[in-house]
Structure formats: C-alpha cells, structure tokens
Amino acid sequence: MNSLKETSPVVHTGLDIAKATLQLDLLGRAHTLPNTAAGHRQLVKLLRAVPGAHVVCEATGGYERAVVTALQAGQIPVSVLNPALVRHFALAQGQRAKNDPLDAGVLTAYGAALRRVGQGRGLVQWRGQLQEQRNALRNHAEHATLDFVQKRLGKLEAHLEKQMEAVETEMAAALERAPQWQEPVAQLEALDGVGRLTALSVLSQMPELGQLNRGEAAALAGLAPWTRQSGPWEGQRHIGGGRAAVRRALYMSAVALARMKQSTLGKFYARLRAAGKPAKVALTAVMRKLLVQMNHELKLA
Image 1 (cartoon, rainbow, N blue to C red):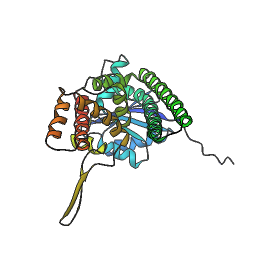
Image 2 (image 1 turned 120 degrees about the vertical axis):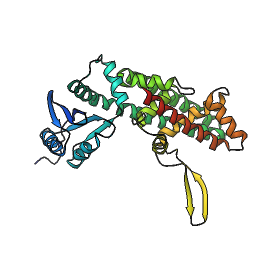
Image 3 (image 1 turned 90 degrees about the vertical axis):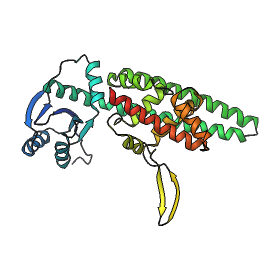
C-alpha cells in the first residue's frame, strides 16, 4: 500500500453567473444550468465527477452568493474574481466578443493564469526577506568597529543587493507572462508615488483590490485604526493585523509622497504635520488614502 497521499492536478473550470442561469465551461464542454437551488445541486454533482475541479467565477453584484455558498458546502474550491481583472485578461487575449459560453471559457483560462499570481506573491515575499536581511546588516554595520567585520558586512550587503535586483528582473518577466496584470499595474503606476514594485506588491498580495469599499480595503491591509477600550478607559488608536506585506509596500510610496510637496497626498501629509500629527501617524494616513485611491482606480476600469 502506498503511504503517500496522491493529489489530483487542478482543473480550472469557468462559471459565468447571471441572475437566472449558470454557464459552466468544464473540460471544454459547455453546461447551462438554472441559478436555483436545484441547479446548484446539479452543478456540484457535475464538478464532483472531475477530481481537482476548481471553479473560477466573477463577483456579479450578489447573484454569485448562493452558488458560491453551495460550492463551498460541497467542498468544491472556488475563486471569486474582480470583473475588471478578468476583462483586462480577455482583452489581452484578443477576446472582444462577449456571451455567456465565451465568458465561461475566459474564466477557465484565467483560472490557469491565477497560478502565476502565486508566483508573483512568492517573488514579492522573497524580495521582502532579502530586504530585511540587508537592513539588519546595515544596522549591524553602524556598530561594527573592526575593519575586517565592516568589509565582510559590505560584501554581504552587496550580495543581497544583487539578489534583490535579480528578483526584480524575474518579477518583470513574470509580469510579461501574465497579461491580465499588465493593465492594472499600469493603472496603479499612473498614481503619484506608485512605482512598478509597489503596484506588483500590492496587487499580488491583495488581488481583491478594485471590488472592495473604502473600509474593507483599509481593514484588509491592516490600515483601519482600532481602539483599546475598557469601560471608561480608552487607549490610543492603533493599526494592525491584515496583510503586512501590503503595508510595507505602501509605506515606501508614502515616504516618497511625503517628499512630493505639490502632489495631493504630499499636501495632505504636510497639513497633518502642521496640525501636530507625528510623522508616523501622518504616513499611515497617507498609506490609507493611497490604498483607497488604488482601489477606486481599479473600480473605474
């Protein structure tokens, strides 16, 4: 008996959801089902017959909620995507015609491309780890007194810098392999203070961006302030939780924006500082506003 657990390869299957119908693209075959409880049961039955099936659908203003709940109850993996990202992907693939079967097929193709998002996230995380190591070396070098140690620390820092450059080159290559991300990245890069690295970092760590409201976006990134309170006592408000990698990427842009005196967010930062806000508090406010801007920009697409 083989003690190793065998796993089935992932089979992405697109599901186009309308108010009354479901259009499923499963292994190259089209299935039209009613968007009803009976149709949901039939859908789960079809998918259970295909080991490794993973449903890919779009957020459709609420029409997807019942079917997604049914899929989750049936233990069928499902990804609910931002429609703007799928539209960019379809256009990048030269797909301009639009009907339910075609849309389901585009979702299937997008599902396969989702794995590249994971690659981008992994590259962002690895670069972050290299940066942390470099920063730790710099802090150590400030207190090193021996010439021998300083030289070795300098060589290590140069090595880490070279590795970071290699990761950034690979990130650019990964973007070329993922056309569905090229337009969203370009949209974010058009914002003041946002470079390609920030855009890639935020999108890879927060693919939901563009389908959230202001509060949801801030909370997901851990930029929504929370209050420590017990009875009449109330402590300072803090941020925390959420996705730290997103905050790190936004912080670098916030620092750049604080120096851009004529930009909207640069002026916002200056007003906060003039009002007596500490630099850290002002930068956090800039980060939050920048993330809201990014979310709004992708919603307009």
